[in-house]
Length: 354
Image (cartoon, rainbow, N blue to C red; front, top):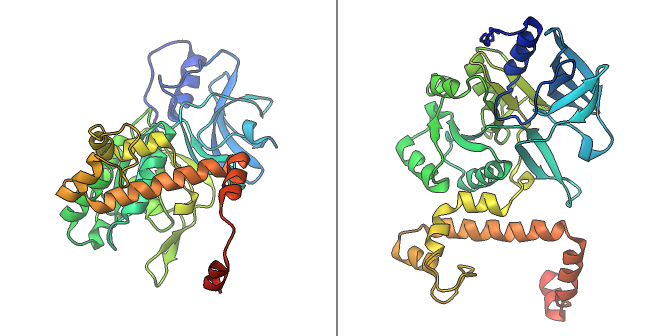
């Protein structure tokens, strides 16, 4: 890859910066590059090891295979900037953004990728639009601290794209939308232009969304893909979190496809994704209106008048319920309180379960 030259300086410093910039380093990163200090970026995480690309003080690019720390708090992920000594990670730099999902233990969160500028919400439209999935991806993206951007894939096999675009815009107000096709090349140049030097992006989508095919179209590469099943659900070979340095100058992180159950819901992300409901709620009679039968609810009034889609409010309620559930799962005291407040089953209940 040809890395753009930087302003002249000491030869070894310029070379170090060239390597760092090719890895996505920009003025948004809060750490400084110090002489004789080896700093690199995690490119792949696999099992108990990760691969780090870095530059020594002469500007020579190096790659080290590093063992991960047993402590989750000190464990780097793809996209992390790290300090090294003798090829070993000694420090993980403070993250400026992080894409997360619930940990399987139900209490903690798992970081998927770090130091992002752009979260590409990759959603296929060849079989219609999964609005629920798109909304939850948007919540996850807003929570990361990066900018969400919707990439609708497989447009060559979709019908009524204008209606799908309108439906997408209603689901993620204020977020830019791009339709693409890895087959016809539609939208690929536009997407490539977004991924210029200094931009770190991640593709967030379910298995079969077309993320690997999108990467192939962007780079003219041939990443291994698996065939599409009879149900139409494509599966790709992304099993690790991997960093790609793109010909356009930016950096792209590819992570395994995730399910709706993997998504982490946060109030800030909910507020951004459902900004239209938030704007209506300003006119509710009560500040703590739950938009569920409350007196003087402006949101429900908008549903009645047709200004707000009923499904939109129902999805908001479902997400709020999920948010409450996740908060309780992370708090043993709340879980215990919920169990204590749950009424004991009656004989009728038991008979009904049978």
